[in-house]
Amino acid sequence: MRINTASGTLSKEPELVEPIQNVTVVAGRDVKLSCVVDNLGTYKVAWIAFDKSAILTVQHNVITRNPRVNVSHDGQRTWTLHLSKVNATDAGTYMCQVNTIVAKSQMGILKVVVPPYIVDNRSSRDMMVQEGASLNLTCSATGTPPPSITWRREDYMKININKTYQTTEFEGASLPLARVSRMDMAAYLCIARNGVPPIVSKRIQVSVNFPPMMSIPHQLVGAPLGYSVTLECTIEAHPPALTYWTRGQDVMLHQSNKYHIDEKPGEVSYLTHMKLTIGNLKKIDFGSYKCVAKNSRGETEGLIKLYETEPPTPAPTNPPSYLDKLFKEFHYKTTNSVGSKGNKMMLETSGNEQQAILQDYDLGGDSELGRREGGKEGRRMDEERRRGRGGEEEEEEGEDQEEDEERQQGHYLTKVLSRGTKGSEVSLQQLLLAVAFLQLDLFLL
Image 1 (spheres, one colour):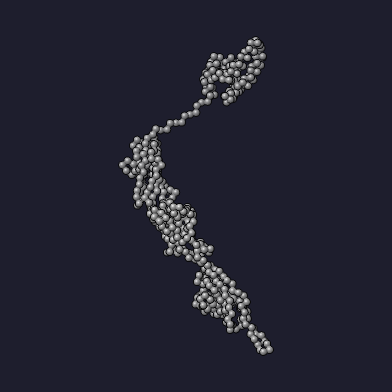
Image 2 (tube, rainbow, N blue to C red):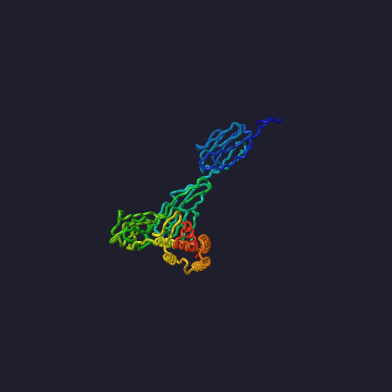
């Protein structure tokens, strides 16, 4: 732009009217930096990598040989620098400069963040050590900003740093393990993070070698002839052991109709559970059996003795109840003398036989209920003598009253059966009611 004055015409110099924005970008992405210039006129705009003192572009021309650099102009006042697929080397200060007599410029900062990356050739690989040895696991990672390293076990169990210090997570580029044991055998994860996704990790398997060890839950096992029996042993070994069963003079046993051999892995990799099932035991099957385990570190064996026992006896049946016994015997003694008439029964058993049955089961005997029964019977006989046994109707009313009293006293069954011995008719309902009252008396006793 030119301005006319009295002394002549002056040109207005360019101005950088907006600051360049600082940008943070993840490596591998594209980025743009913009420079806004007013009154550019015939002057030119250049982009410069300030830290490297390298000119990148001038006006529409790209000066650098970097193919990822480009420049654009919107046709008015904005000049934009394009960087594609940026990497960590692109980070730094970028300057937009106008070539006036005294150069005018602005600067912006490009920050490139890089996700963490674990360098395999500078990190530990899978390791195998002897039990009791010490080792140090290392993990090297790069990234921007520099990543932090943490360790944990893949199974989330605690890490035994030494005999006095355990932790679920350990921070640092190296993980020291002192005097490792079989319990330290696991996969360890080296985890690198720096706030830039993604988080990365490396898996390092630590194997601990030791000779086989064996535990036997039952060293003496008894079983009867004709039965089946199972012998068991548990083995700890690494590398995994060769396992088998023997008997007698170390004769190896094989899978057959007689022997069933089962081998299952345990809760941890170095555990193995072994079972030997012997079917249809005979005399020759009793004796000594061995569980044997061998690996490159050593061997071990466990002895189990199988002996003969008596077969189990059947459990006793429940004894009959008091009432069951009572009515079974009563039924036996009266089977041939009981007749039916509708829903009534005629009990023709003799009075002596009835009295014997009742005495056998302590009905009206020495108990408190028996004493009450005897006293009640005496009162009834006195009353009959006073009445002179007059009138069939009076006798029936008296018997009804006696039945009411007997229900209250609890020995209704005794009188009902006594009536049967005298030739009187006894209804089925009366007999059942008598049984109910007898059960109540027994319960109260």
